[in-house]
Amino acid sequence: MNLSQIWAIVKKDVVSELRTKEMVVSMFLFVMLAMVIFNYAFGAEKNDLTPYAGGLLWTAFLFMSMLGLNRSFVHEKDEGCLDGLLLSPVDRSTILLGKMLGNLIFLIIVQVLAVPVFAVFFIEVNFLGRLGQFILSILLSDIGISAVGTLLATISINSKMRDMLLPIIFLPVSIPLVIAAVISTSGALAGAGSPDELQQISSAMKFLVAYDIIFLLVAYALYDFVVGE
Amino acid sequence: MKAIYLLYSLPIFVIAGLVVYFPTARRWVADFFTTRKLGVAGFALLMVGLYLAFFVAPEPVVGEGKKIFSQKIFYYHVPVAETSLIGFILGAVFGGLFLVKRERRYDFLSYASVEVGFLFGLLVEWTGVIWTRSEWGTWWEWEPRLTTYLILMLMYAGYFVLRSAMAEESSRARFAAVYSIIAAVSVPLTFFSIRLIPSVHPIVFTSSGAQMEPPMLAAFLISMFGMAIFSLALIRAHYSIQLMGEEVEYLKDRLGG
Amino acid sequence: MEFREAVPYVVSAYMGIWLAILVYLLVMQGKLTALGEQVKLLNKAVEKKSAEKEPETVNA
Image (cartoon, rainbow over all chains, first blue to last red; front, side, top):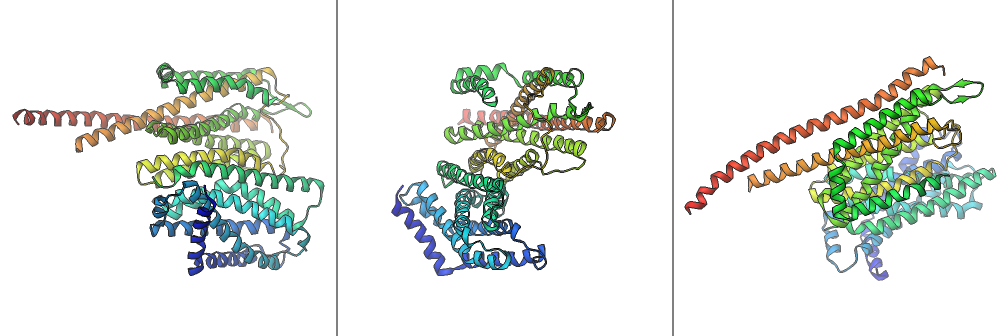
């Protein structure tokens, strides 16, 4: 494993994205549209949705992340780029980490754009004091999503169903992550009322860390078998 | 308390590991424990368990002498649940063996284990739903254990979709093995993540609690062993079907070429 | 819940389990017989083919 090699793969993704900008733009628009739909689906004009904000946020982010994961591998597959990567003298794990970091970066870019809009739309309390906690919980969840997602997107892109397969295998595996992410993000947005809630939020954060570590290791161990052959 | 059970089951894992490691022992075990023997033994144990559950074990009493007959569901509910977990774990173990050894039979075994695990998982949902209906009066309750199983079922349904979505035989086996490992890793994670949310319903019966009387425990354990052995028979039967399918393919190849 | 009310639930739970297992076994049995027949037919065909082929190789 080599940092400059990983960086080269990340840079390749970022440069090609900067040329077209199609992925980030469509992901951002997807999140915006999801917010508008949430407004009408849950009657945000009448109700204060702050307690459910974590859930809404992660519903939008989860589906948005799938859009990006698919896109990043459809490119690779269609233009024979993955074969090129496999032919180049780099480890399979380097490819995994490179693709994973690329996906993570796009996820974070979209979230940086979307979260302020989301806060303005749906959150009626001041959570700036808990901003660190909020960012930490989102980052931890992002790492898990990109680890599992990169692994499973590589599988799904090699199937006959291609991008149809990803939701079916990615969503159930990511449910534990979403549960913990919703608890910790909602906690950061609404603030913890009782010691019990505080306890729950901290155990959700610990769970996120455990999930990230476990699936980073699993992805690292299994990527050899997933990619090419 | 639970750690002690784990300690007791350790020799079983050690023996199983040794058997898998030594080819002669493996062949001997495979020849001795035929599908038929396993099936008959499992079925007999399950029948004994059924008898103990209904005619020997007392009904638990809650509150002022109120007996709960629907608790009898648990004598099969819990064994079915544990058996399905065994199926998923075996699926991941055989998947890992496939990835390391690249022998087709491990793929067959992994597929068979996951399928039997899935079947038993559906039965967990079935019995669980009936229990919630009889005791809480609703068909579906977001109760942690049932919800965990729902998620597991959805996850392993993805396994079958994944298998059928692969065009080539070799990549199907490889990706299925990888996914069976990912899913098995996800099982405990799902279990713990559901428990991050405090449950609304009190747990009336714990499967391993102090309130269990000896005859109840005996009925549980016998059904548990019976179900596990029976599921091994199902896995072997499924495996032999796939071996036969392989033979058909081979014969077709010979005929064509 | 009274004993009388609980009986149908308990019975349906157990019946469901055994029915599902029975159906699964029947399906497997069906697959097994179908495959067995195929194997038999294919074996015959293979034998026939090899019997046809042999004289040719002898003549050559």
